[in-house]
Length: 213
Image (cartoon, rainbow, N blue to C red; front, side):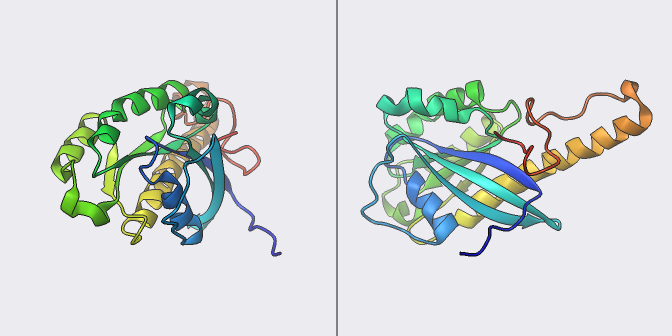
């Protein structure tokens, strides 16, 4: 088997939302271009990686698929720690999955990095003929809570790559800004102001000391 490519950055991104919204299929579509109509509910946490090239740098994205069932919430809460990005997923045909977004968003902001990049994802856009949540309603929700927003379909691949790549690119922009300000501080001394923080526990300049644990 070929060695994994070297990477300059390591970002941890979690995929959260109610059970059955399509988190696992979004992950498998993005990482392996696969979709399973018989996909089973995730038990605890699943994990995959993908390498993404941005501005001549290689980012290793650690993608964590968290279980949506309440009985696993205590298990998955620990996996938010160190996350610098998230896809907050609901099913556009199931009102209940949308109504629970605030609960998921609070949990994410309680446990993930303070400056985590969050994208709201309305999945199953291939079923728009039976949608329960309009695009306009979700757009207003995302604007109110400072989130980016896309509707996706893991079934037909619509916007799946765009959703993940947007989150990773936005994280990269924040880290690049942090590194630039760190360099300026080193030149101008301690009075130059604090850099943007995206991970309080580790440096972001190397793969082994990346944005996430």
